[in-house]
Amino acid sequence: MSFGVDTPLGPLLRYTTRMTTERAPIPKFIGARVRRREDPELITGRARFVADIQLDNVLHLTVWRSPVGHGRVLAVRTEEAEALPGVAAVLTAEDLQDAWVKPLPLLSGAMAGSYEFTRLPKRYPLACGLVRFAGEGVAVVLAEDAAV
Image (cartoon, rainbow, N blue to C red):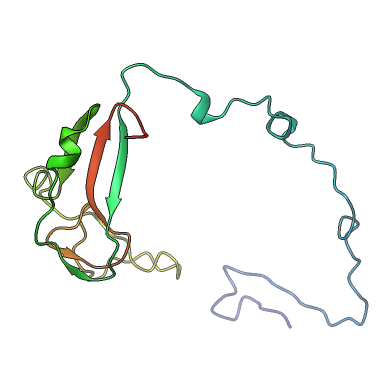
């Protein structure tokens, strides 16, 4: 089968298939030990990981995510988290409402290859009054230590 210039795909794609009874060769690494060459530092533990980098004056951000699949956010009580030592800020959608004039831009059809903007529900970085899925961000905590 061949796609030529006379088909709609012709200018974009030239593709030819051929029927054969030959078997494809089995790659030599299937069922065999493969020596890793690409990253010996990572394998031996001599590499430097991001977690190993220590910077001064850094705040760690943790997102508190919704445990429920759908629901209304009636209140987010942040007093206990704010009282913990080392916590710089606890922010919710209400705290950042003035900073977000518009919802986040969403690109639909990206997985399907169609990059057209379509009508989608408004999405903000944190849930604003309604949680739409389990794991949606509800609040963020900025602290001096990631363990807080």
